[in-house]
Length: 384
Image 1: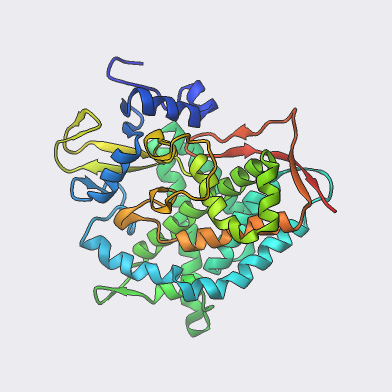
Image 2: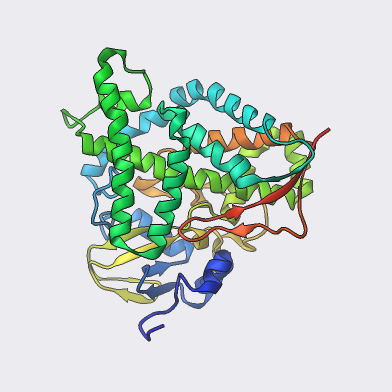
């Protein structure tokens, strides 16, 4: 490591236990420089400052336009207004029966009273089927999308810009093919979220195909990996906390706030980024204009200054402090959908089993950055 670097986000010890590494960095060097992530921000207060000050910390932190993630006001405002109704109460109520039926079917298909690998046996199929159902995409895309997520993570970790661009192009072509089929169908196109998006306008103009592709890419990239990670994290946590597991079986209405708290303790999404528009001092570090800043969600949500013991599970915390879905103008618009889907999955898993138990000689295998959670979780499922 060169003298200019405070840490190496891809060091073996960091990848082996990222949560512990981020905890250590938050205490030792709350704004840390590295060649890979530039200026990483670990403390809750600093992350909140960035989220709420979009004039100083721009979302235009990528060479590629992302609608609306990489936009700032006023451009961001119009696109955000277009997107939010897709995750409004009426849409969620209409999708909920489909969501719950899919979760119940997935749990019913699990082996009974056997050891089960949760990630590929449940979490990834859940994320893929749920997202395709919400967007109206065919089941034939499940496996290609799963493989694409893996290739994206490998390319991102490598830092190879050509590989990252190739993976992005591959995914965009998949979406363009779906749009082409709907255009050819005309009035006979299915009435789903994808078709409705194709008919939207912003500032009086129809969305371009590039804008539609970007929005659908964001919804898919932002959902598939983190949703699967969320299910794996929560299932393992409940298996290792049987008292909480039993409490949630008795009180399924507590599953949603419990999910948010578990995912505060162990984040399903590691980081996001911004770019400084002017020189700024953050956490005692002077950062020039035009520098990339990486917000480490997995650290900020465990900040002792806000949460006390970060590993203590509590349902009485102030939900506005939990950055699971971000904050400010870029807070995740899909949060209502994510909360519904994860709640339905965990409720179905608890209702369909008598107990989830860890397997002592098979601890979970951590995911490889930029993914979070686990790449393998072996659990013993007990049925009545």
